[in-house]
Length: 582
Image (spheres, rainbow, N blue to C red):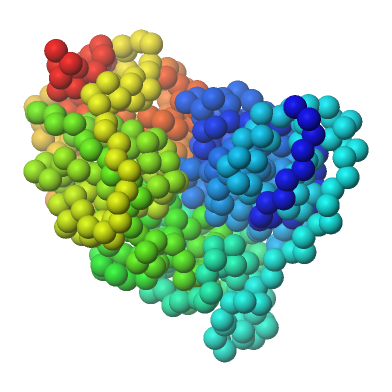
């Protein structure tokens, strides 16, 4: 192609040039990119195995985990980052990692958003040069470097935001250095999100306590050492190790020490050591309409969709900035119009399906919805449980960048279709049985029927899930060569212990791990000899192959228990899905 110059919206500053690496599929940096090498490790992504370092990454947007901003920060600090990112849609997670690197550590790469037509032209070129908000692309690197660029657009500022006296005091440093830097980051993100003012929030849930590398630790310790203290009740997400027991579990101190220190830094700033990726299971869960700041993708989706609370899909690091000030941008899902469905998805009628249906459906709906908030029809009589909605939301948040979903007749803001859409006509997509079968094959992809490890609790197991597991295991014997591990929060662990369920499951052979979650767990909790893992989590079945290097089977909780007892799983999809084609 001939060389071309485009001007877009700059969300990160700097100049860069390099070979283009492009995809039309969104990418989650957490679980999708190795922060130590820059390799794409999402084994379901078209770019799997490619190295992003020094390349101009051209993707529609980010997706998946809020921890992607931490991976981007780590890549920048270790010199493994892309040279630049060109996107089709604005994405807070992609942007925030660059903003933190620039504001706190003085490092940055250009991030530019182009319109769809120009994005497509860049995606089909071989080389690009990015300077501020300008992108020049072509197939001849010398010509791309030589082509003159129009005058650079000045950097955005925050002068058009309406600030309270307290906001200005934070910005002026009245409340200390940590709060000042936090407000600078908040205002910069508010401008990018199109917010014209900030609002008070009642609580925060911090996902930035996940250890993505030394950069995440440096950031938290810097805020702490600057005197940072949270100003609203703040809970902590799962960290990367079991905070109380990682040493006896055999975790390498080179990883366990900094991962534990990261949790300590947030506790020092006043956060509660809840260490759960399912804060909606805590007694402090917010009410409908409550303005909150939650990070962790599954928690955000559950809070918005099932509880009816109001939060953006906050990236790691922005969560603690807001917790330090109690102020958040008035944008996105904080506003009524930002919560409306933009897509209707009709779900096929299925009979006698089991609990694997909901994570499977969430995974597929996320792929279909991409960045759009969907409303699902066809489940009005299904009566999904809170555990079903938890599993659905986690899988949905894995493949989608949307912050919430609606299910007609089920979720609180979808009593009617008009409630969900605001009365606006939206496009409709029909999901077929064949579509669900294809997604099942993506999740249940291990070549061997043998199972070495059964992984449960992504997101963290609830009390009711522990009860169900105990019923399924009762009177049965675990296979000697299969490990069964459940992750859950401390609060749930205490309830299960007091109810006697913990000791019953431990007698069967279940190992419980608290404080951390499967997206962070490595060897030796994952046995070094384990080649195949089975899970009932759509989220972990997606991320697991890249995170662990193992093969994965996916199925219902009952199927997982069966595999734990026999050492093998059934071949192919379940009858309730497969038989629908007959």
